[in-house]
Length: 508
Ligand SMILES: Cc1cc2nc3c(=O)[nH]c(=O)nc-3n(C[C@H](O)[C@H](O)[C@H](O)COP(=O)(O)OP(=O)(O)OC[C@H]3O[C@@H](n4cnc5c(N)ncnc54)[C@H](O)[C@@H]3O)c2cc1C
Image (tube, rainbow, N blue to C red; front, side):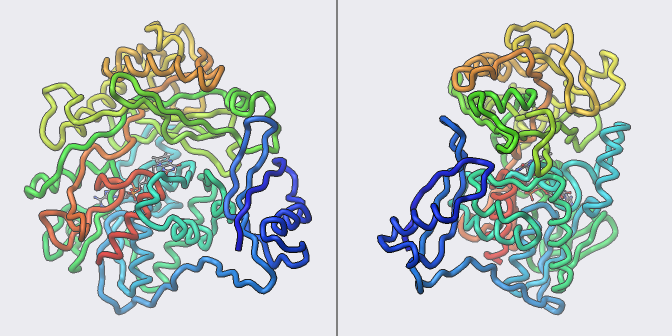
């Protein structure tokens, strides 16, 4: 087998003869002696005329090709139970791994199943009624179910990403995710995949319990959801970065937790056509993938970076508590809305917060107070929808001017012109004001008053860590309890959380 690279125009079928001829050249044989070609990577090269660049494996005639296979799931109806708290990516992939290893996952999820959850999210967007157990972060599929479904991660050290991607394909995702450099699924496709994962887990003997918010964990283990209790010798705790009540249980029991850095800033929304123009250097054609961007800057010792960019997406209210304004973004598979949004955030380290915030909840409390300040400002200035976002045009923000008017936005609850530059803490605001004009050097046209900044992008990762034994992955104070995924502070994003779930299940 030999690997080679080849590029073809975007939007046209791959010319099979050219592919075979290139494979023959790579193998040093005649084209008729090429057995098979397998595309293993596809990325966009937009430096000149936009192209797809492919990495291809070429096999000689008769040479064995072994495709990746997912380990079979076992029947676990009568097997040893393991409690998995949270049905987000970490919990679901932990449960699948338990099935593969012959253990019975009992999944306890505070929210509803992925279908019933949709009605709560619609009510939140339109009427401003927040269900604290069923929203954009909580419910089957976790925070990843109604998202862009981006599947890339920088953390290849955490485990075998192929295992996650191949399972997602087996549960209904497009095979494109196996080769795309920046794979994504889309919020219109994710719920079906999440349901297929549930069907598989239940058919093999695992259990799901929805509307089951965990209220206490007694070592041994008895896990309480109000009056109801579940027993197992091992518990995987995969409750995500917003489950502040879980951290409070740890604090009440005297189990170790520590403040952890996160990132804080705004969501930035541009018209998507602008980003297409910028990224494809004016050569965008509708058959080309909707353009993405990412950047990192350093301002006074802190990273300022784009986060969770949603091309052709919309902004959504992702608060989990009343009285706070938190935004995130999501896109359909086709990424075909008129807008491009991304978090633009500043890295916050323990110690960056004002002195009045201390202890393990220092950054969590700081995060919450900023989310509340955004909410309070909008309420005090006449906002009707409780999740109205304070907003400012990009150049106005950097110049410290309240915008006279605001451009249209995809954010359904609406916006109110606000001094975001003052509502954000000065150390965050100052870094954003300095970084945003700089981004224009890489992406000419990015720094524009047609772009809107909205507060708050604050749930970038967990502001608390539940420390684990690095060997066993158990909590340092509670043997048998596996803090897992984003909420434990050891992952960020769908794939890295899924990998962490797999790793915790493997340890059990
Ligand atoms: C709108 C949005 C868009 C996003 N887009 C992307 C993206 O495109 N790509 C990407 O990689 N990441 C994205 N993210 C982030 C990503 O979703 C998370 O990093 C990931 O879901 C974390 O996985 P997790 O399983 O650790 O936690 P979560 O997904 O947060 O799941 C935790 C689960 O635990 C449940 N839970 C919490 N407390 C309790 C309790 N007390 N009892 C029982 N259950 C409980 C919750 O209801 C939830 O279902 C997005 C997030 C949001 C909100």
